[in-house]
Every structure is written in structure tokens, then in C-alpha cells.
Image (cartoon, rainbow, N blue to C red; front, side):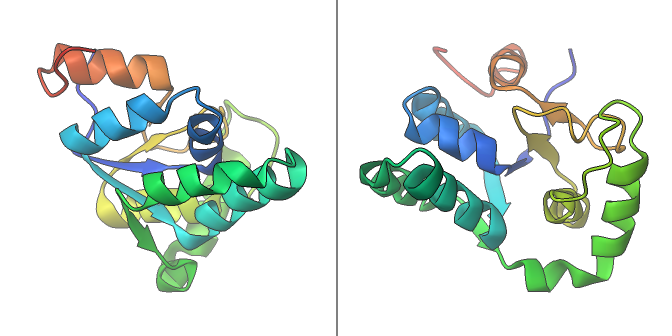
Length: 149
């Protein structure tokens, strides 16, 4: 297994899972081993899913605490590469769903030369490495970047 990149882009599903207690420890551990970045749209989507979808607004404080450990990039700063990232996601063979809703995540990964931390398969075949939480933790531990996990 190759080591994850030193910069990781988080998608909304990782933040939602962490807020629900599934991987908040992982987010904090990875933040000590790598630079975490995301987009303002990811933060908005995660907060919306928690408050309106899950109807658990009390978890928003956890999202805010986790987001404070990362750099948040405005989607407006990624406009130059959004069209290309939409095309790459639409044509990605592995996901085959044609969804381009996460093009901003892929554009950010391209712009900061990062891997993507996600729970979806939407980025498979897009040309950027994507990591599930268990594989990310194993990859960081194997590379010596994550102690005691």
C-alpha cells in the first residue's frame, strides 16, 4: 500500500460520519499527520445534512470543531478547474453514476496536489487517489505517520 499524500481533501460524508461519532477520532488523528483541506461547500453540505437531514443540530458544534482543524477553501477560488473536474467525474468509469456534484472536491484535490478522503466511490477513476477511513488509517500507520492507531 502506498502512503497517502501529505494533504488530504475531505468530502461531506467524512464530516457527517465524524459528527455522528463514527470517525471523529480519526479526523483528529489524521489532522496531526497530514494537512486537511476542504471546500466551503463541503462544510455547508455537512452542516445541512446534519441539521435538516438527520435533524440533529446539536452535532453542528462537532462539525465546527473538526473544521477548525482544517483549511477551508471557497469554491469560488476553484472556478478555473471546475469544468475539467466535472468532465472527469462524469467520465469516471468506476462510479458510473455521472454525478458532478462533488466536482469542487476534485478541483481542490487537483489544485493542492492531494488525495481525497471519502466514503463514496464517486472519485474512483477520476485520476486522484481516494481513501476510505479504514484504508487511510492503515496507510498512514504503515508509513509511520500515524502512531498508536
